[in-house]
Length: 118
Image 1 (cartoon, rainbow, N blue to C red):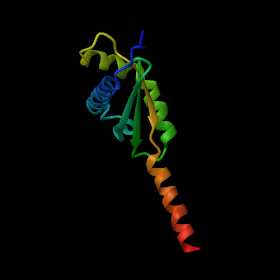
Image 2 (cartoon, rainbow, N blue to C red; image 1 turned 60 degrees about the horizontal axis):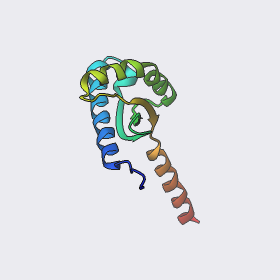
Image 3 (cartoon, rainbow, N blue to C red; image 1 turned 180 degrees about the vertical axis):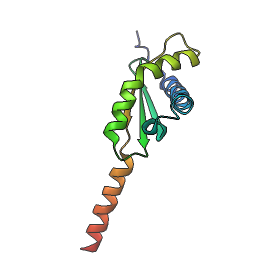
């Protein structure tokens, strides 16, 4: 008997749908919050049999820890609103994670420039 494989395409679709809806929620409900208003969602990954979605964000604010803390504090309210907007039986748990790709890329460029200068 073969083990049933999880359709990763479905994972991608659900993650994308959650990302879009949460971005709309942040835009609609948190425009007056200065820390959250500067947040952009740049990616999403669904895992755990679609029970969890990790949302990656970047922020205009330099205080990423404060933004992360504010998003964590609002996660329950955001998920409640997500449940209202989603057309699914189950709404996945969401977690916000800072996307540091730009900082890492800048650091790599800096190191490469330093090597070329030698």
